[in-house]
Length: 416
View 1 (tube, rainbow, N blue to C red):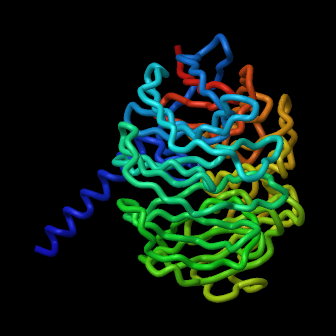
View 2 (cartoon, one colour):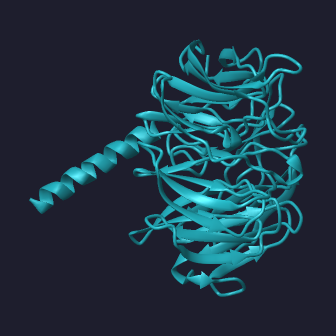
View 3 (cartoon, rainbow, N blue to C red):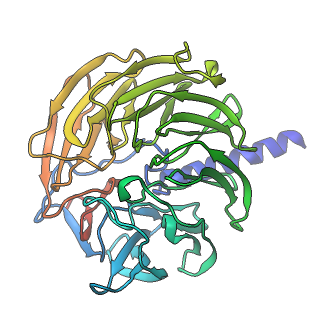
């Protein structure tokens, strides 16, 4: 009987994994790291080439779309007049045609504070488990919707007060029946686990932190699940079941945005504002305060990303410098450079996180250019592609089709 139950559990896990691989449930993709095992998107495109469809989306395009089945879900904030409040909306589009299936305004309100000139009031990205869609708008609430746009439950965490009114940007993470949300701001910071079916809190842990924007990462390390969050004061890991602290490590500096990465027992965390840094942390040695201990495999203090999240492709770690279109590639095991910092032609600023597939790296810029780089220890550009509007949201890939959200439109890019 136990053996049969184990087999059934493995079958269910396999089905869930296969479903996730065929979709884009999290803003960093099915593996929550920007890396995709399958797919062959176009190398080249432009406004008149390999554009299957182009759909107008009101509001500024910063939230990364998520995809399940034939639906693409997009969050946005739309102001209907100069003095009017914002409408916080979710759109569902047909991913084959770009036509709007439904739209839902979940809240109408005026923001309580401003934002950075390169941000939007809907920079946070949603998430789905294939049964429900979870639209997160930070201070404007969290909403659980069914796939037809009906709100099943909602939760209000109060107001975030962001350093220098730069705007909000952290996104939720789901693992099993739990949804994890980090709430670092200039007030009382915390991390919370919710029951994704009801929105009820399972645990809440206070955090001695100021503003950061990093999205939590759940890691299964030797059968124990932990939640890793990089932040301005310390990177911390929590027990997924209880919210208790497992380990902590300082050294990233202020305004931490990039999401952590994990592979082969090592967590990679980074920041690129003032005092830029990147650290590789060995989980087998991580317990308690590991600052300046041998649990830190290696660290660097230059050329690291401010906004975009890095990409780990095999033993090669790719990342931008600050917000600039300057790329580096490091050996993930040793912290030594393969190449870079390498300036990317035709680009100035990069906010979008990196996408890896078929031994290629896709890098999109605020100017609308996307470079395709060869995955390797030497720098090689395979293609340069330009659209009419800038790209802040991260690229999305389903099979051989690439989706890029520009400032005003969502592009479906496929061989024609």
